[in-house]
Image 1 (cartoon, rainbow, N blue to C red):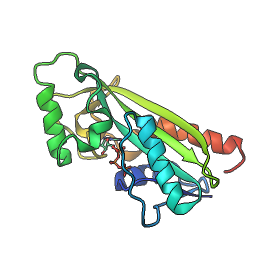
Image 2: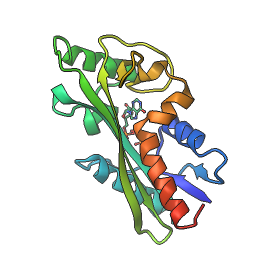
Image 3: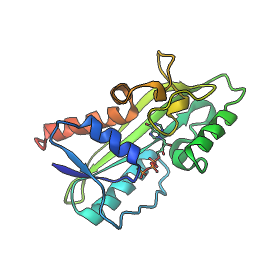
Length: 191
Ligand code: ITT
């Protein structure tokens, strides 16, 4: 089964394809013309906007991933603005560390809302996965992407960027959401 992945983030595409290897599923990039305006106010709204945009240009199964880092002490920020919090990933990390300077409550979580649309254009399932942790005082590790170097995993003293791909894919917000999508597809005998 082929599913269009409504994303232009190569890291997401890589992680998702790693997680479905051997399942007879193939995620393909959207055809040209895919350029959604992410003007929703929640992960779920943006996820739906992206899935619908991918469906518009492909008219086939489409899956979107809208995700981000939510920090308790910052009232949930950067949240849906995670990808736009500063110009580059390094600058985004710097901004977060700066805003968290002198803040003791480091609690945070990653969120990922996946939305699956069928070839008729109807939403089949939308599910949000979370991964809890906290914000480190300085970056560590070189794996993963985005905010991984400053996200300390729960019950561990490692950042997400110090985990192997396999370790990250076992606990990530993305894997929690994807497992639900895969369970749904299996239940419907689609995979
Ligand atoms: P698409 O919309 O094309 O999928 P995007 O990167 O703009 O790509 P989002 O709007 O969903 O995607 O923003 C996600 C941002 O949240 C991403 O750019 C990272 O900064 C952050 N993020 C999401 N998942 C992450 C992860 O697993 N590790 C680290 N940072 C993550």
